[in-house]
Image (cartoon, rainbow, N blue to C red; front, side, top):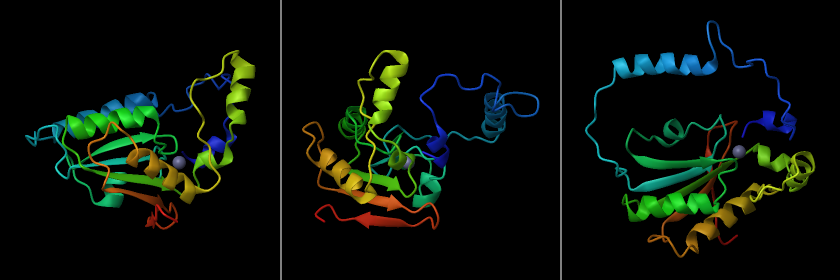
Length: 189
Ligand SMILES: [Zn+2]
């Protein structure tokens, strides 16, 4: 998550003006235009769906984290599973289970990062949401204070999942958004 989340409100009254409007269209129009150029130069690599490196990467959705560039990954190399915080939720376990059991991955890499938006939130976010919309979300915010501890918890959730075939090669890292460098987290610390 970007630092802009710190200004985020639980209010649904976000501006209705197309904030993402780009000259001549919305941001989505811009993406569709870019896709036409991409497809024009695209050659079918002839791959199947099984990741070449047999690895799944679980990471925060933060816009400053370019996983393929940061990890030297090529098209077809890995599964990437991303959400706010890179949290190992039930749905991430669902994706990892399919990744391992149906598509042959064996290694799991977890990447959280410095300056994550979840560090500035608390579980109060859920209560504020409930006050505003009259319904408490079923999901936890999974806010955290200590990014290293958050990575350790994520590694534990993967390693103890009964659904996964391979839990021996699970490693966790913190990506520094200022330097681009990964720092490995020792699960036992
Ligand atoms: Zn983040």
